[in-house]
Image 1 (cartoon, rainbow, N blue to C red):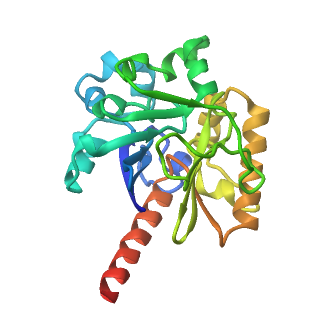
Image 2: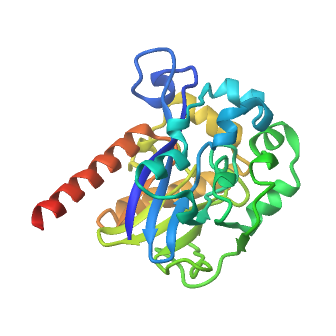
Length: 285
């Protein structure tokens, strides 16, 4: 399998370094880190970021609260479909989309790929059917997925993965791709683990937001700490899963590489590593 790291959304909320840890101005820079995986079963997307319809009519599709609060930058160049076409593929080549969860900044591109089967945890889909409260009504946007024709829902089963519950054998997908339930941010939030030639990758979604949260002595910027508090549905579970991920990163650092959805530094590092790996392989030929 070949994996491409994509940024499928740009959000620039006020806060600068107090939000992302590096920006010098008053706004910060958050990404929507998605994956495009080339498999024998076709292309697989992990999350979609914002889609073309979000870009064309944001206030029709998204909550004005989050459009403004996150200062979302709507530009076609960030869309998954645009980047897939630039890589030389057709949108019809995307056969499967695996979602960490159904938040507006993860599921916006679903309808850009009408031939794809969408895979998500059953508990996440159940949660969007019973939206309650200010945040829930604004984070989940049914217009982003009301035309999806093919869904596959999952509950934890199978052998554990590094002591985490796991969903193995996702329908139609290679056995190297697993769901890892990581509830807390949402009721059905999950990480996506991919077994590669270089070891395991774990897309942790929104289980954490800032790279230093995975250090033995964790740190998080005030802005992202507050955002996580605002968005969580189960604080105890979220903090427990963060601690478990931290231990995974420390105890299995040579076996598993973790990253989250919105850290621009993580995306930059992984993208550069993949480019370097590609260059080395081409030199060997």
